[in-house]
Structure formats: structure tokens, C-alpha cells
Image (cartoon, rainbow, N blue to C red; front, top):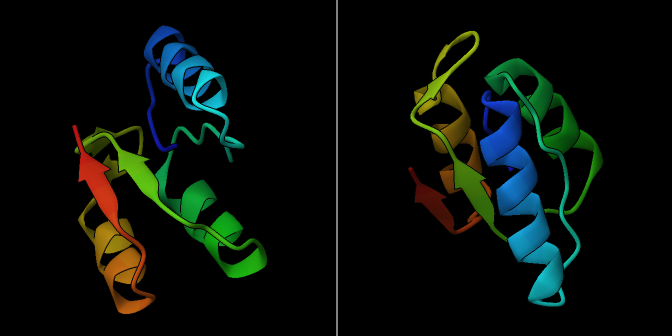
Length: 73
């Protein structure tokens, strides 16, 4: 989960957990999320389009290169 608004990020994480999945993050910046992407196995991603450090486009590209499905909010 990559979302820079704390309340929204917490709500998304709660929904993901309620669905029986493990939430990774939330991360407020694309930089933080890309670091986690290098360290952890990610099955799917939920991205805010505008993050604390700019657009999530570079992160989306990295996810696509790894074949990770994503939802962009």
C-alpha cells in the first residue's frame, strides 16, 4: 500500500487485512515503497497517484516490470 494520507492508508490496510491478506506498508513515498519492493515479495499493490515525494509513476513502472498487478487511486 502506497498512500501518503495516514487515515486513508490505515483504512486501506484494514480492508486488505479483513480480506485475509497481509498488508505491506503503508508507505507515504514512492522511494519507501520501491525499497520494500526490492526486499519483499509483493503479490499486488494499491497506489495513490500523488505521493509525498511526487507521482507514483516510477513505482508503477517498477511494479509492472516485476509483473505485479496494481490499482491506482
